[in-house]
Amino acid sequence: MKMKKFINAPENLTKELLEGFAVANGDLVHLEGNRMVVNNKLKGAGRVTIVTQGGAGHEPALSGFVGEGMVDVSVVGDIFAAPGPQACVDAIKLADQGKGVLYVVLNHAGDMLTGNLTMKQVKKEGLQVLKVVTQEDISNAPRSNAEDRRGLVGCIPAYKIAGAAAAKGLSLEEVAALTQRFADNMATLAVAVRGATHPSTGSMLADLGEDEMEVGMGQHGEGGGGRQPMKSADETAAIMLNGLLSDLSIKNGEKIMLILNGTGATTLMELFIIYRRCVELLKEKNIEIVANYVGELLTVQEQAGFQMFMARMDDELLALWNAPCNTPYFKKV
Image (cartoon, rainbow, N blue to C red; front, side):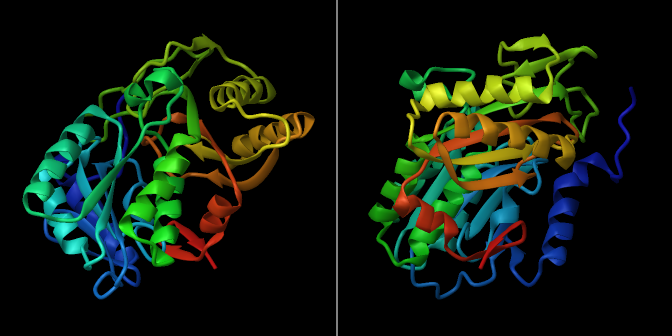
C-alpha cells in the first residue's frame, strides 16, 4: 500500500517539523543550534537542568516535554535516528546553569552510542553531568538483565520526576538518585496490531496479519516474540497487566502509576475501554492507582497499538509527579 502523508521533501522532514513545533509553542520553547529544542526559561534557572535526546518521528515525544518542570533541552536526530554526540555536548553546555546537568538517554543502540561518547567528552571538559538510562521494556530481556531492555514511554514520567526534583532545588546527585529510583521501579509492555511506515522512505516497520497482534512490539517495529491471534480489549488488558505486575513483583496493597500510551493510530475509545478493565483487575488485587495518564505521549507514526506502563510509587515520587509543570504536551498546575 502506498504511503500517504502530508509532507514535502523527505530530506526536510525533521527541519520542517521542528520549525512548525517551535512556532506553534513559541511561548514555551525555541530552537537553537543543531536541532536543539530549548526551554524559554532556561537562562538563569539556577538549578539542575535536564537534557535528553532522540530521533524525530515519535511526536509529541521527546521535545513536547520541554518546558518548566520537565526537560530543558531536547536534542533531535533524524527520523527514528539518534543525534550525534557533538550536538548533545553542545546541548549540555547550553543547559548548564552552574548546578549540573542530568542527561536522560533511552536504551536504543544508536542513542546509547551517542550517550556514551557524549559522557566521555563532557568528562574531559570537566562538566558536571550525570546520566540516567531508561530501559523498561519487559518483552526483550528479564529484569536481571535490564541493560538489554529497550527504552519506551517510561522516559516521559522519568522526565517529570527529574524536572520536579530539580525545581525543588535538589543537588545533581539527589536529582539523579530520585530519577534512577523511579527508573528502576518501572516497566512497559507494548502491543501492536498494525505497523507504521517510515515517513522518509515509505517502508513498513512491521508486517502483521489481519487477525494478528504482537505483544512486545518495539519502538521501531522490532518484534517481541509475542505474535498471536487478535484478542479482545479485556483479554489484552489482562495479558499485559499481569506481565507488568509479575515483572515488578507488585504485591497486594501497593501503589502504582499506570499509563496507557497510544502509539499513533489507536483511538481514545479503545484506550479507555482497556484502562477500565485494568482498574477492575487491580481493584481485585487490592493495588491502588495513585497516578495515571491515558493518551498519546510517544507515538510511532501510524502504528496501531499501545504501550502499557507501570511504576511502583511512594509518597515522595507521587509528590514529584503532581508538582507543577508547563510544557507543550504535559501540564500540571
